[in-house]
Structures are given as C-alpha cells and as structure tokens.
Amino acid sequence: MFKKSFKYYKSRKPPPNLTQVLDFLKSEDLLCDNKIKKVPLRMTNLDPFFGLKPLDTWEVYEIVAMPGLLFVKNPFTNLGQRYWTVRCLRDYTKRPNKSNLDPFNKPEDTKNWWDICQNGNKLLLDKMRWVTLGYHHNWDTKVYTENNRGQFPTDLKHMTEFLAKVLGFEQFSAQAAIVNFYHLNSTLSGHTDHSERNLNAPLFSLSFGQKAIFLIGGQQLEDQAIPLFLHSGDILVMSKDSRLNYHGVPKILQGDVSEWSSPESESVPNEYDDVVKVCKDNSAWKPFGDYLKHSRINVNVRQVLFDGEIQLSEEINVF
Ligand SMILES: O=C(O)CCC(=O)C(=O)O
Image (cartoon, rainbow, N blue to C red):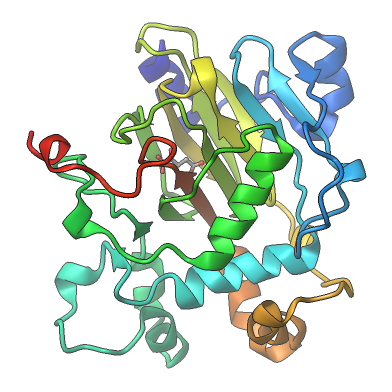
C-alpha cells in the first residue's frame, strides 16, 4: 500500500488528485470528519521562546488513524522561520557538520557552500541534499557511533527541547539531526527511522519553505498510508505507536511566500542577535527568501541515547 500510494502522489503525468491529502489549513473540516483530534498542550506556563508564537495560540492535533502522530500547525513567527532558514543554509551547512557534498570538497577547502553560491556559483545551490548534526547519521551502515559525533547546535537543542516540554516529552534530549534540502522535483522515498538506540523518544520534524506531501503508513509496507500537507512552519512529531512507521515525501509543491514575508518585531535574546540582523535586513535576507521560493528545508531532530546516558557504549557500535 505504501509504495503504491507513494507512486500515485509522486506522479507528474497524470498529476494526482489531492482531495484525500489531509490539509490542516482546513482543520475544522478534519475535526468534523473525525480524521484528527485536538491535543491540549501539556505545559502552558513556560516563558515564551524566541521565534515561536505565544503558547495560547498553538494548535496541536493527533491523527486519529495514527496514534502518536502529532501535528503542530505552524507555531513559528515569521521572524522565527527566517531565523531557522538562515541557520540551516548559512551555518549548519558548514564543516565540521557533514553533508552530501563533502566527498566532492577537498579537506583543505575552507570555503562554505552557501558563500560560494552567493558568489555566482548558482549551479551548486541545487546540489545540497542533506547535512547531519550531532550524532551523524551514517547513510550506509545506518549506525550511529561515538567517533562520528559532532557538536549539536545549542539553539536547535533549546528550541526542540522547549517544543518537547510543551508537548509532554519532558525528558527529550536533542542529540542528532538531519537537515534535508528539497527542490521542487525532489522526493524522499519511504523508510523507517530505526537507527536510534532509544526508539521510545519522539522524533521532531520541522518544515520551512515550499509545501510537501508527506506520506505516512504503518510499520509494515502493506499497511494503509495517509498523505498530508506540510506547510512552512508546520511541525510533525512521530511518537509512541507511530515512531517506527514508514514515511516519505513523494512531492514538493510550489505555494505562497506569506509565511516568512515580513518579520514582526519581537524581543530577541542576545545570542540570537547576529542572525536576526540578517533576517531583518531586506537585502541580506533576499538570497535566503529567494531560495525558499523554490525549495523546502526539513529539520529532523532525534534523541539517540536512553535518558541519562551520555554516550554510546562500545558494544552497540559493533554490528
Ligand atoms: O522531509 C520530511 O518531511 C521527512 C524527512 C525524513 O523522513 C527523514 O529525514 O528521515
């Protein structure tokens, strides 16, 4: 079922009928049809977090047919969306973080991909596919190891752990992330995320830029799959029974740019100041905004270790 649905939504000729794709912009209809249910926030008394809207405005839903699959309808401010876009493109793509372009760059090459793209090499812009942060995902072995671990960005750690607290996952610790860069013709085929030692910890998936059709099935490929739209700013949480479900992205669709069009004024803690300057300066922001007009960025944050563990032990590195 998963493969058949994936092929259907991936198709360009003929294009798929999108009426069955869950669209949380029409959440009232989905609630009426019992496709989703509202989830109350578990903590509402936390101080506001930079780049996120006030907690009393958040809308969180669970997909009824997929227990544990939570959807947070864009809780980011426009400034917040700009902030994470700049971090992903300009900063997280830098070494020592790992990316799909590493094999093509010489180790002594200190130039950054984003800077090279700004200096006229537009061809390179579409070549970035992924970057890994913290425990680096090994695409061949699918095994995390202690000697393939980098520093996890503090701002991303704080933001995802704030999200986790609000949603009732107080123990969540952000230790690994994959940042996926999608163009309008990119897809991500169906897979399960099972490399983390701790499979009870939820997985947080943040989307920025153009909208995607996200397809999620069950733990077996034969299980029925559900398509849903992910718009800029939306967050998906795969937890509990849905944590190990097959999922993928069969299509990216061009949408509008309003989600990040004009940054509002909000108080900015000192440590975010440098990036916020870029977000608020129209000419400095322009290349990032231009990128988002035809691309999607997905940030996928995971906990690898069990609560209280500080590193992977030797024995689980041997496969
Ligand atoms: O882009 C997405 O929404 C999903 C990404 C994903 O499934 C992954 O990185 O494992």
